[in-house]
Image 1 (cartoon, rainbow, N blue to C red):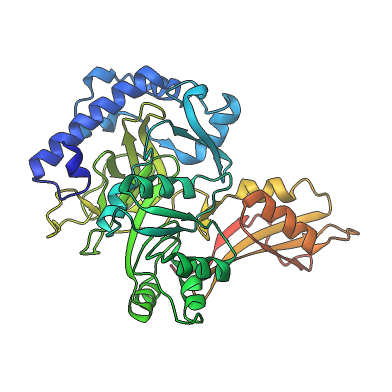
Image 2: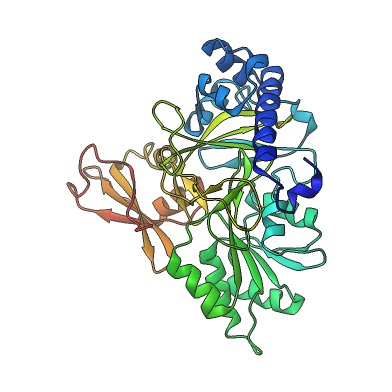
Length: 412
C-alpha cells in the first residue's frame, strides 16, 4: 500500500484484506522480537509467531486488557515489558489516567492522526487550534503531530481559558479546531460574543461522546463542518469519519477486531463486542490489545470509495475506566486520593451531564468524629485524576455498602 492510500480512498476489498493479513503477520513477528509482554503471551498460548499469517490466526492469542497495564508497569517498570526500543530512543513519555505510562517513538506522526485530519478537510497552511492538554497526557501531542504532518499551523491552546482561546483563534484566523465536542461548544458560545462574531470552518473532535443533539447544534447552529475520530493513547488513531459521516473507517495501518469480551472470540458482523487492536509498531508493539471500548462493524460498504470497514461508533465500556471531559477516570485513582484519609468512611463518584458538559461529583461519608474539608478533598481528587471534581459530604448510610466506587449516570 502506497503512502497515497493514507490520504485517499483505498482501491478494493481484496487489497484491503491482503494488507490486513500482512499487517497481522508483521505485528506478531515484531512483537515477538521486541516485546517481552507479547513474547510471554505467545509462549503461554503455544503460538509460533511465524505461523500467524492472517487476521483469523489471531484467535489463538489471548487478549491483553488495557486495565492490566498499570499492574504490568508496576511489576516491570517502566513499561511492563511492552516497549520495543530502549527508553533512550523515545521522543517523549506521557502519563495517562490509570495511571499508565505512554511512550512516543521518535518518528513523525507517531500515532498516525494525519488520515483523520485529511479526511476532515484539514489542509496545508490552515491554522488550527489544538485544545487538548499539553501537560503530562499525550492527547495534544497526538493531534499536534498529525496536524504538522498534514502541514497545518498549530495554536497550542490546551485546556481552559476558553474566552482567551477564542479571542486568539479569531485574531490568528484559525479556521480549524481539534478537541472535545463539548469544549468546542463552549468556544463557539464565546465566539458569538466577539465583534465581529467568529466561528470555526471545520473541526475534528474526539475524546468524548458526540450525541446527535450536540452534533446538530455545532453543525447547524454554528456552521462548523464537524468530523469525529476515535483512538487511544496506547494504539493511536483507530477510526475516523469520511465526508459521508456515517461510521468510523478503520485506519489503514492497524488491525481492528471486534470480539466477545470474555472469550476473545470474534463476533459476527453487526454484533457488539470489544475493540481489539494489533499494530506493527517498532517502538510499542501491540498484539490483540483490548481497548475496553465496545463497538460493532457496519456491514454495508461506504460509498466514499474507501474499502476499509467502519465501526458504528462508541457503544460503551468493558473495563472500569469512565471517560470524563476527554480523560479516563479509574476507580483506583479515587482510591489513591481518598482511601488513605482515615476520616473518609465511604465514597462514590458519579458522572452526570449538565447539558452537554460532564460533571463528576464524589459523595463522601465521614468516619465517626472526623471533620472533613470538602474543598481539600476535591483538590486531592482533581489532582489525582486530572479532571476537576466536586466533593459532596453526605450523611452516614447514604452510600450503599459494597456499591461501585464509580458510576456513569449519563444517558450516552
